[in-house]
Image 1 (cartoon, rainbow, N blue to C red):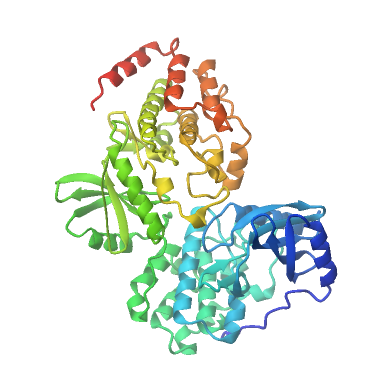
Image 2: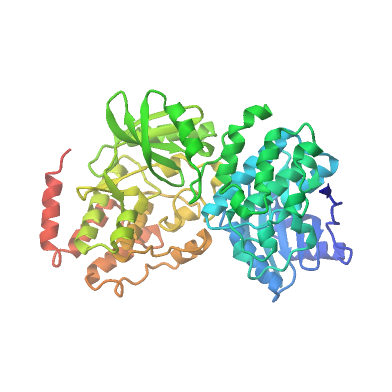
Length: 591
């Protein structure tokens, strides 16, 4: 049977000379931060609350004290991982660096207490347990979509803010850090999946075990037994606990990963579908795609929401903002594409209003190479918009299927995209998330660009900052966009250049790894050499590509028209006939 929670460990180790460490921190960070207090310290790490003298706010300053150690490499790895992610359930990293022998990172200060401290008083109230569950499943679905396995979450690393939010502050044992991590102590074992204790790296189901252990701890104020077969159902410890937790948690804490939920979304959907029994209502949790997700529950909810307006025919795909379905408009008797936005995007009324304005503007931009937006609707907590159904695939699918494209096809796609951008930019509409998945290839071969303005419309204030900004997809976003700086039409031209590179080579020029590592490659200031990739590219065209992907927006083409003209000029000798046909078709294209 599980035991009561242990007493919290002293935050400052007895061997630490706290006054001397505090004084040294004051001297080291003088001019940057005002050191307010020392919160925790060991011989390797220290945590301070400091005041940022520039932004005039309290932040958390985590310092690593020991240079040239394995622990220092571990600290760097975790810092890079945390900085590459941005989720409201994860502590936000603002900056990092060195001061003499010290390495440090600056993060949001979480005003509240740890789950460990909270359950010392009593089990958490049921609504609080539901909020914790919602945050953990949302966070896990997010990190799993980024190929990250957290592997260990403890009550000491789950913070409960005074506002009611739950924040996870530690990813030090994630799969990205495993090669430099030290073994964890025995007190971590009950919160770690059995297969990971046995030496496995783990998979998403392992994280569901650790999430289940945390929820169990919050609900019962007990540490789950290290032997899953001996874990007592929550209702036997806390009779007032809703019985749905018995079923959900006992499945999540099963010894065999095959018997657990397959994804965080599946667990979240099951919890939400049973909330009537608990008598508690909470908002719909984030719905993110994953290779193992069960979409049945969501589609059932969507069918009810669509009512007699649309008939759901099938799913076309999913992405960062939502899922796309093929539906039949029952009033107009035509098939259209319907994009359902992730509910977590539309929980903020400001975001919804901004989306409506952006969609209205996009609907007025009618062009042969831009997907037509038809309507905006919503019901039962869902928001969607309908658009032209484009038979065919997107550029990413085409290149992945066929490999690098012939030059005449690349140039046709590029020039048609530039025509579309030229038209959209004249309305003041910037795409901000141009990538191969948003460049649809009609079965006739012509281009349709989708999702104009969606990235900006759905950006929320708590997503701002760093390479993890949701405005744009890192592999194809302009550097200034990833850094949270001002973005204009030149960011679209940069992204289109990278999409063109992808169609030429079959690979994204700066792809792979975390958002932070992708940003580092973007900021080198030059596109990877195209001369060795293709022997049918002229020097003039390569120069056009280099200019399109210039690091500084001032060094790029200043309009889609300028870019288009440069492409045409670069091909006058080597692509005369295809160019002449394209120019002729452009003059006679349908309105």
